[in-house]
Image (tube, rainbow, N blue to C red; front, side, top):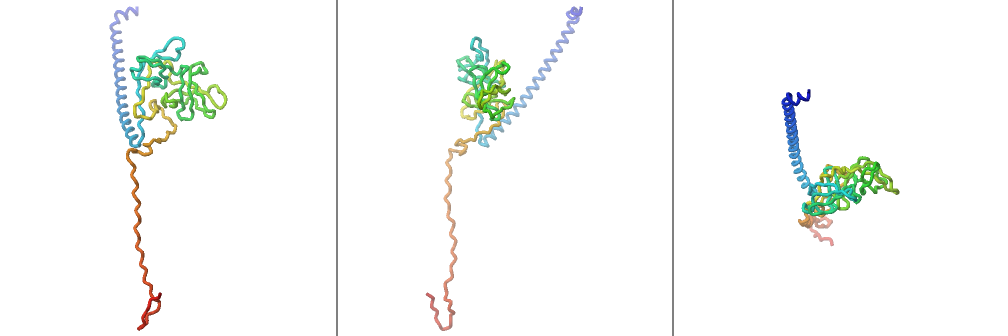
Amino acid sequence: MGHALRSTVLYPVMAMERGSTDRAGHYADAARLRAERDSLASFLVGQSNLAAENRELRSLLGFRPRLTYSFVPAETDRLAGPGSAGTLRLSVGTRDGIHGDAVLVTAEGLVGKVWKLGSEASVAIDWTHDRFAVAVMTVEGETYGIAKPVDGPHGERVLALTPVAFHTVPDTGSLVVTSGDGALFPRGIPVGRVIGEGKEPGGWQRTYFIRPLVAPSQMSHVLVLGAPMQGRSDQDLASAWGVRLTQAEVADTSARAVAPDAATPMARPAPRQAAPERPRPRRPARRDPTPELPGRPVFPTP
């Protein structure tokens, strides 16, 4: 009976109520989107001012400009078949400007690298692949090592940080980033967090497990890291993910740091002027101590 009333007599009323609810929801969505747009516009305006101030301050202090990489967005899908674990098919290739061994990242951190390069599509391996390896370090720069995929204590796929010196003990939850060693992965890309100590291989070394920040289910869309811009020399990407490395900066020993303007010849020092001679005091003439008597000549003493 109730269903018959709702589908006949009450149907126009329920349709109007449903329509008003939908309109209210659309208005709420539009207001929310407008607020997010205004907030984003305000944020971008503030960021532009900060970026201009940062460039000006770095120029005044003589700092080198930061390295800027180009990113190529790509879609991925998993390859099927024996021996294809940890491999991805990329929707980009050489025609899109990517190169061999290019690094794959997401907003969370490191994914993998390009393995086989094609003109329109490529094949990449992620951090779960057996051939994957990356040089990493902790944010404070006290622990260095190589991270490779292994099966964790609970059977899940993780990375193993090894070898680690016996006296170095990274805290659980410490962020691990790429160290830049090996000239393949730029320095500062977040990799994962330490989740515990693994089985000791013996001697004076330890092994620690790292849970990567990017799960295999989050790799459907990636960014392929392109070549750095010409004329840039800083290869630190930590700031792109908001990571601040506390490791001491390496002193700049370049020729420009030693001589700010190497093209301008150094001025020769002015010749040293001799001090003016002081006038010598005139000595009084030597006189005969014999008193002068009237009518007696005085002869100089020899």
